[in-house]
Length: 199
Image: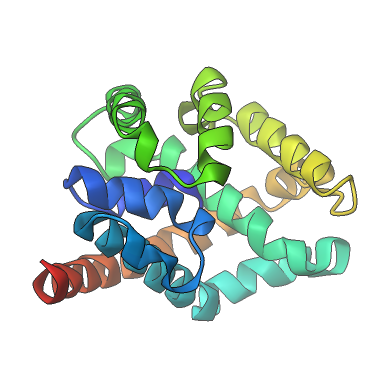
């Protein structure tokens, strides 16, 4: 799952959202250096990633891309899934996507000092480009994929992955709907357990 899904799956506690959002910038046991609620978010992020990677439907999505993109297929599918979450947002939240995203941008700016260095560089670009709301549109996803491709010095060829999204659109959307229902239940359970353990 990519940024939007991780934020959504965090529940309603602010620092859990921040931790889940920024977890990829925090390695190993470095998470213990952060506030307790951020630690919950970081550990939840790791559990979400592990669950997703092992899910048979996620693996099926990746197989559609593997011959063209190799191990980058997983990254691309994560981005595709954020598209389907954003596009179908009303199925998952009573709060509009615009308001949810705007509230998160305010939240992350308020806690900017807590972000790891990688995310202090990335977050201003994300907000300026309004990536999270842009995920709802194929053009927005294509822009994200081009940016990811540049970060791999064009080795990943991800800039072309918008073509597969269009070609297999309904297949990927069906995969997302299946896995996200499973993942929402799993995340709620794991978040509750982590809160009991750490708070």
